Amino acid sequence: MSKSLGQLEVLKAHIVETAGEDVAEQVMKGSDVLTEKSKPEVIATWVKGAMDRLDNTVKQPARDRIMLRCGHNCAAVNSRPLDSAKKRRAKFKTLDDFIAAEIAKPPSGMRFEREGHILYQFYTPQAYSHPMRCYCGLLRGLPQDEVISRTYCQCSRGFVQKWWEGILGHEVEVDLLETAVSGASECKFAIHLA
Image 1 (spheres, rainbow, N blue to C red):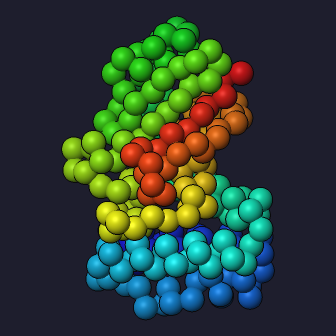
Image 2 (cartoon, rainbow, N blue to C red):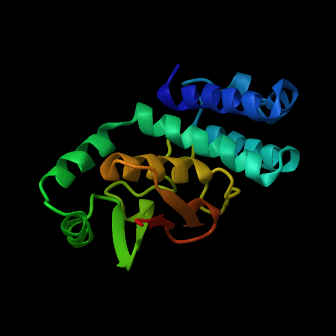
Image 3 (cartoon, helix red, strand yellow):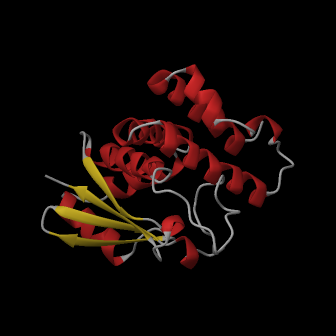
């Protein structure tokens, strides 16, 4: 099973632990026909439907928790960006110096702005070297004219949260403000540094 399709098993497990087996079966309906040979558009369309079903069956705090946990899992599985960020952080004596360097020369596909104790992190998937709708492999095939529930993007919030917790060495609050797949031109997160 591909890494992307493996994410669907993680999603199902988090739905089961939060909302129960019956809800998981309802949300995951049709996922059994997805394979490694499924076209990206087919996978993305199924994910969009799954998020609609999740939105219709699970109240917001619980569904946000489900997707946040998916993001935490994704950060653990895809640790290379965090490892790279930790190495960059180690080159600076202070967090402020590190953040200034990240703002001046951000990793590909990102940009940062700072306002006091809030750092805004932007994902710019359309400006990436290979333009896409989303960095997530499950949504790369989402047609340009389609949008998906922001519920899905709580997963990205979880990823960003673990990324900054790894850099800072402590828990951090992250807010999801905008997402490229729900209609904005880029994704925007607020990282509360203090």
